[in-house]
Image 1 (cartoon, helix red, strand yellow):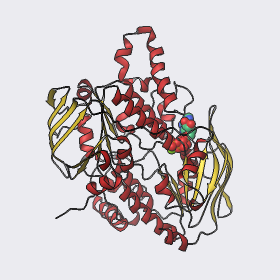
Image 2: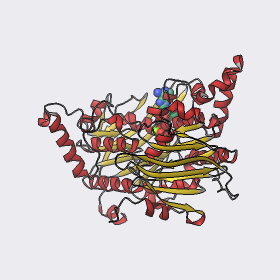
Image 3: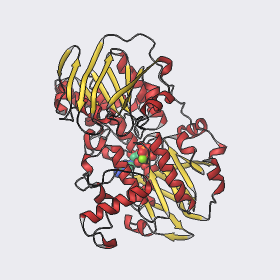
Image 4: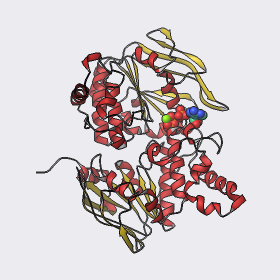
Amino acid sequence: MDAVRAQHAIGSPLLVASGISKRYGANVALAATDFSVATGEAVAVLGENGAGKSTLAKILTGAIRADGGTVAMAGRRVALGSPRDALQRGIALIPQELAYVPQLTVAENIMLNRLPGRHGLTSRRAVEAAAAALMERLGLWVEPTVPMVRLGVSDQQIVEIVKALGRDSRLLILDEPTAALTEDEAQHLYGILDAQRAQGIGIVVVSHHLEQIMRFVDRVDVFRDGARVLSVAPSNTNPAALIAHMLGSRPEPAGAARAVSAAGRPILQVSHWSAPGRPGLTDVDVRVCRGEVVGVYGIRGSGAALLAEGLGGRRRDVRGTVGIDGRTRAVMTSPRAAIRAGISYVPADRKRDGLVLSQSIRSSAAMLVLRRIARWGVLRAEAENAVARSYAGRFRLRHASLGQPVGQLSGGNQQKVLLTSRLAADPRVLVAHEPTRGVDVGARREIHDALRAVSDAGTAVLVITSDVEEVVDVSDRVLVIRNGRIVAELVGAAITQDNAVHHAAAEEQT
Ligand SMILES: Nc1ncnc2c1ncn2[C@@H]1O[C@H](COP(=O)(O)OP(=O)(O)OP(=O)(O)O)[C@@H](O)[C@H]1O
Ligand SMILES: [Mg+2]
């Protein structure tokens, strides 16, 4: 990778943004910041949740308008008043909050805006063939005929990536493109981007995966409170220094310690789960005891998502039983049934399954404790506030007021509200699927600490994740799932990223 970086030439300035500002009421999202990218250059944009990264990306792609500042491309000032303007100038965005049309198929979404007629795409089959050809060329594959609604977040993310890469762009802006991808998939994506960069395309990547992104980019820009505070070559910095710039004067939070005490009696017992399909599930058993955090690690298509959704009551095709505190029942087939059984589920797709974007932070945070709070009558609003306020402080929620709609928060801050609502429910079992997707490094540790704390307080905590660093950091015991089966259990010193990745690797061993 370093050899590649040394060889390719960074050209003339492609896009130069100066003094860009944006405010929402009293809330300053961007404070007269500068930003630039050259032809053939890859720039990482880093910063805490709410630092203004997505706002910048949206302004540069015409999705929203800046209040002030200028943008020049190849030396000439341009107006980016709409996404169309930006597309015409060759600027493509892969948004953080994926913007697909749920009723359409994968192929239709990929070819969207190029339909119909142009390029001879008149029939459904032609659209499918064109999308398939593009995916084959890029080496990224999602079944073209499947409706988008049926996809998990990582497949949705692949579709967005294919869609953007299929356009002839001069500048590609990717807002957390790897948040739902595994390390291997991310590396594959960076390989593709590398080829684009070699052709002189400018690349901007927003990411919270510091070490991963530093290996790829030519420059790292750190944003804090709506402005760029550092712009540096990766070879002249390190993750600790970057984190210090992101946080400003605040101290870095300490990580959670692994539990040393032995686990207590079993609280959650998943037994003999099976489900049809590829990979489906085959005889999956998972036990979580009092006082332990169990991690399930699996890559895209491993069956990990099926397991998570089954525990959240989102599947009707899973057979087997669930025991909670010794009481055994069939797999829950509705979200309500899962809640009634004592399971609080953090879905991977917060927008589809987790949050109502128009609802206030206050009522979203207290969503699952409503019934308890309702008994307090007039004190209800106060109680909702108390729940929301305590977690807002703990997770450093960046918000204007607790009455603000969740949809106005940055992606990572929405994730914090989702976590709050599930943690505050004080459940018997907490099933967290990709709990820190899109969350910054500081908040990630706070969330891992919070998972540890609810576990210590007696809740069974199961973290299902495709993030190997996360599973190693947070778990007392790690189960690795591959092709729908639990293929390894790691305890103690065996809990390492290498071990987990090795067992999860998709290669068929025939
Ligand atoms: N529509 C909106 N209304 C009000 N405030 C908004 C709106 N959109 C963004 N903001 C605010 O602007 C600030 C910057 O948000 P932005 O989405 O750019 O953050 P970010 O750096 O992308 O964070 P993350 O890492 O969580 O995605 C946040 O404080 C956010 O709450
Ligand atoms: Mg963002």
